[in-house]
Length: 145
Image (cartoon, rainbow, N blue to C red):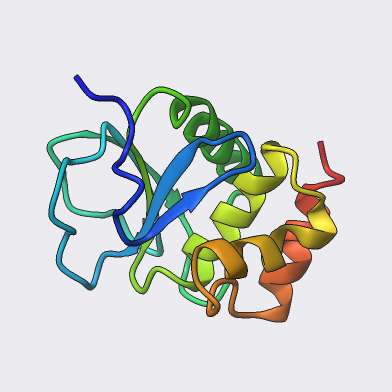
C-alpha cells in the first residue's frame, strides 16, 4: 500500500517534518484519489460510518472541543499516523475546527504555538481557524502539555 497522499492533491497540509495531512469539509464531496487510512472527525454529532478507521471528537461548530484531553489524544494520534499513513482531518466546512486541529498538529510537529495559525493559513487555507477562542486554543495547546 502506498502510505502517503499525492502532494498535488488539494487540501493537503505539509508539516515542517514533511508529513502530509488532508484537511477537508465533509459538506463537500470526497476528493478523487485514495481513501484515508485514518480520519479524525471534528463534529458536534457522531459522523456516519466510513470504510476506514476513524476517531470522532465531539466539537460543535464555531466552538472548542467538548473534551480537550480527548482532542489532544486525537491530534497526537493523527500526527503519529500521518508519518506512514494517509490521514484526513475533517469537520463540516473544513475551516474552523479542521484548521484549529491542523494548527495544533503543526505545534506537535515543531511549529511555535504563536506561529501555528499563520502556518496553517499559509499552507492549508487562508480561512482556517475562524474564531478568537480557536486561536487562543492553539496558543494554549502549545503550553499545556
